[in-house]
Length: 95
Image (tube, rainbow, N blue to C red; front, top):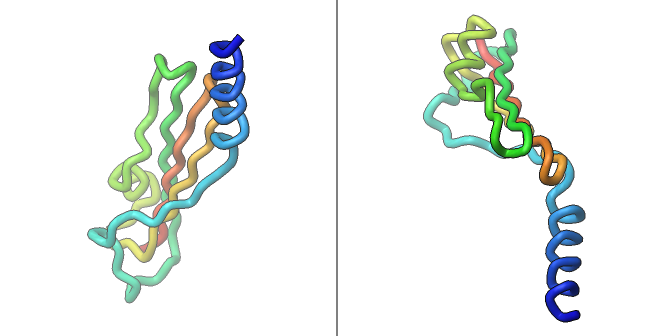
């Protein structure tokens, strides 16, 4: 009985606490706020069941996709559907 209660609590915590979207500010190594935010480059990483990762959500990949050489700011978006799917999207704004 006690083990089943622990398991139920663990699964409930993962389902409730792990859903949603989060935006995180990266370190300032790339960022220059004097640069105009005229272009956007996007890069995305996916993982299915935690075993099948593919894609590249790096800042460099997003810069290359948007033709950006100078970065104004970076947004990171994370999405997680518990136990099945994870994605990270990096959006780089700059010129």
